[in-house]
Length: 161
Image (cartoon, rainbow, N blue to C red; front, side):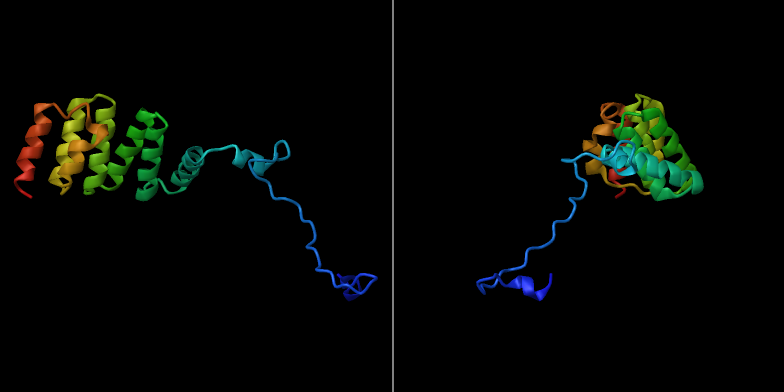
C-alpha cells in the first residue's frame, strides 16, 4: 500500500486494511470435484491409516510398528480375519515379543476361537507378558475369561510375578 494512501484527503491517518486472501479449503466449503484435497477431506483417520500402513507394509512387510497399527485398525473396522492375518505376520516377524502374542490371543478371542486364544495367551505370558490386571479387564478377551484355562493361566503366572 503506497504511503499516500495512509492519509485521507482531510489529512486523517487511516489504518491499512489487510488484503483479502482466499479462504483455505475446510469442511465448511467445498473442494473442486475430483480434487485430491476433496478426497482426503472426505476420509476419516482410520481409513487413511489403513491405506497408509497397507502401502507401507507392501514395501516393508516386517515393520513391527506398522503391523501392530494395521492389525489394530483392521480390528477397529470390524475386519477381524484380516487383523488376525496381520497379527500372525507380526508374530512371525517378532516371535519373542510377548505383546505380539497377546494381541494375537485377543484377535482369536474376538473370533471366538478359544483354543487358539488360550495357546497364544499362554505364549505371551511365557514370554513375559505380566499385565494381569489389564488382561482381566480387556474386553477383547471376554469370550475366554470364564474359561477355566484362562483362570488357571492367570493364577499360575501371577504367583510367579
